[in-house]
Image (cartoon, rainbow, N blue to C red; front, side, top):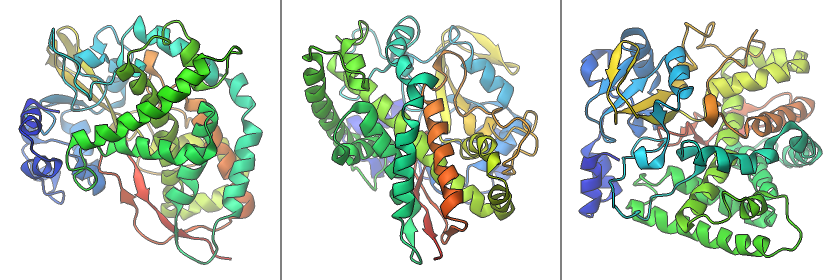
Length: 440
């Protein structure tokens, strides 16, 4: 959060008052805004699905753009594919470390001697080498192709059960009935917790994205009180796994046994649990929802798929590009450097807008079209690059692939019957509600 927002919250100002102070008219044409004042980060733009023209203009006119004042403080927007790739691939220049400000808008460097606030949650995605590399290495074996192959039959069994249980000839929310259900069940399996507890994981994942949402929490402190319930839950599981004489193979067990992770402080432990929950839920679930929405908007592509299901391996990465479930990642410049002809100073916040780079016509042919048989569909930014490339990309693609293999066998028609309801977040490009109907 910006210093101004921090001051408001330190003074007891609510989320709603903070949002009101920074309120914008989402219907204003960004071409009418002076370029120097263009600010694409407001969560309301994403909730209203009005962000795209902002990025179209920035890619064309000012691809490395300084916003001097926003609700999250000053920041540079990086909006073209190649520039994003450069930032993501140079961790020695652009830091992810939480003490430098972390990976999402709102973070700030922690001053020397400053105590960890309750919302300071270190995690390996918000660490630079060597900490990042050591902790990532602990969980990486869980996501190899060989390890994931053992999950294919289970995913298919669950996908079939979910699809066969969907109502016919009545409206229902695809997000809750399908997207959340499939990913929640997989999360519970990866953590080896009871399936009935998967809804707790989804709740904590949603809490992360609603910390600043006045419609959900009056203050950020209320949201973090919920997240510490997540700590209590996993702390009990951690102690049970650590006490086992036979090492487990689930995510909690491997973290409890790993040399670089077994002695984490409580807030770091909670941070890494939340990283794995959000990473395993939000990205795949929103690609499932966004993929169906894209099929509805491009019915000829749906017909193409039904005629040739062998296109699914190409269609899945196109869905992930199209949705761009992680809208941005932040970095903090460690040194003075140049990017896109602009002088970036040490300490500056740099925002890689994946959701913009995935629409960059310089790198992607007809980027604003959903095309399920693209020549090179994996040429996208959604998984990131460099040392922070998404660990769970294979698992996410596997779930999408299997789900759509079963959809084309069972559901030749799924009708989207209302406009989607989007998440109020500039970090996760999420769909909260997608009402559909399956004709009998």
